[in-house]
Image (cartoon, rainbow, N blue to C red; front, side, top):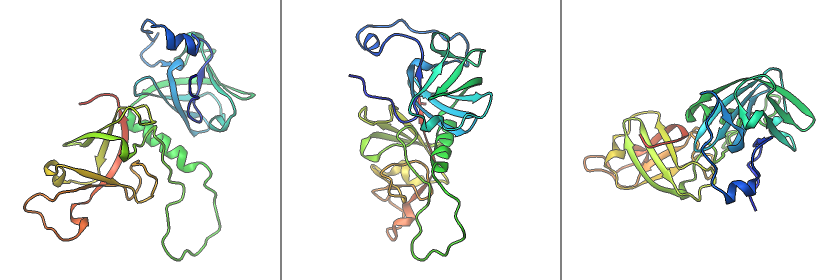
Length: 252
């Protein structure tokens, strides 16, 4: 039995049944246009604002779907579907998002990279359920409100299989058991960290205690062995701040 898709995932309205997909080899589908989204392979969708969806599909493929009108609540609907001819959503007429009893026309579709998808998904998660309160005085440690983690754009350190350092930061490979469905994640650093290139092992730490590394404030990567020539005092001397995390489709 197939497992249900993640929260807010969208399903195509047409195409072979899950059983047929699982038991028979399907010929490669050719998109009718370079911008088109294969709704049959949607794995995750986030509503960045009432007219914008960020959608992940296939093997680390990402799209921005813009709706013709405001269509709030897609990500909280009991049932949500993408309705399009032959399962291809291209921004053409007669393409819709069906969310419970609400049907909203698709205005445009555009491919985006993993970094943009992660930023949009993180924005949607942080905005969800964050209420505006009167001014209050806080005493003691304050934990960031609205920060969440999702395997669609974050990775869990326990699933890391390998990593490599390059001028762009880190490229991290995760186990196939990782729930996000992505095999590789790019980790951008917010500054230079020459220790990484000479450290045989590293640790990832999240200040938000999410159990995931998402690029939230306080997420760091820490070399576990100090290279010769670096001071031994103070963990912060070899702590590298993470600026962004996002899935990537291939090793560069």
